[in-house]
Image (cartoon, rainbow, N blue to C red):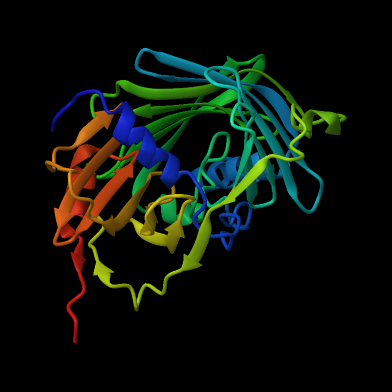
Amino acid sequence: MTRRSVRNPLRRALLLAAGAVGAGAALAQAGSGGSAGPDSELHWLEQIQAAAERLSYSGTVVHQRGGEVRSSRLHHLFDGQQTHERVQPLDGSPRELIRRGNEVQELLPEARRVRVTQRVRLDVFPALATRPAAEVLTVYRVQVGVVERVAGYDSRVLTIEPKDAHRFGYRLWVEQATKLLLKAQVLGAQQEVLEQVAFSEVRIGGKFDRNTLRPSWPTTGWAVERSELRPLDPAQAAWTMAPPPGFRMLHAVGRAPHGERARMQWVYSDGLASFSVFVEPFAEGSAPGGAVLVDGPTSFVARRVGNSLVTVVGEVPPQTVRAVAGSAQPRPVR
């Protein structure tokens, strides 16, 4: 494993992975367990996901990875039928994210541009799982622990341990009454904190001011860019790959970002951890060495396979992306 600065290639891949990957993603079976007792591990996981999507809340989120600390304002409204959300990053160049249902608009005032994508990731804080909770428990062990205070709320501490080396562990702080996730840590093999995200202050429920969902800038006359997506039939896809045990494919799409080469993308998840595989035409001049780049919990690797470039990126250990990239091969032509 090579540990060095990965901000440029890794951030590019992360923007792709976190972008639109199919509008057909359904809510991850939250709250549908039925048979789970109120204090069971299954019940806690189900309720965390349900609370993130179906509650209304506003607060300040602080994200720490290594020596980098970023913060944002989050406004989330569930009107009984659809989710509305506005995220205001408080660091770096001005921008905002506006979500209605599965459509996400990224507002870039300095460029007078709006980028429109379709959301697929259901594990963005304070959400947690992308798969039914019962499936998560096949590859993780959950321990329900003590009560601690986070952002002024009594919160139950949950420790989530992986059953193998293909994924990281987690520590969660969940608000006792509403089950909203208030703080989350990604833990390495030695229980070191690789990444942390938490509310520094939050208001849960109560009367919601819809004005907080309005963008900061009028966008009339701004350029609009849409990422064109087309679903891929996995059975007809021209590539094969072997994910580690417990990871299943969520989506496969063809993407054509504005002004960029067309690429294919597969998204895999075990319910908590996820990674994306990109395949695109190899560009002369690029020289992927196959070394795994690491930034906190995120691992990234790219390798040339024939005339294509295969890139794997996700919040999984380095050996996971290395194994997936090594297994990716074009399907033999019959």
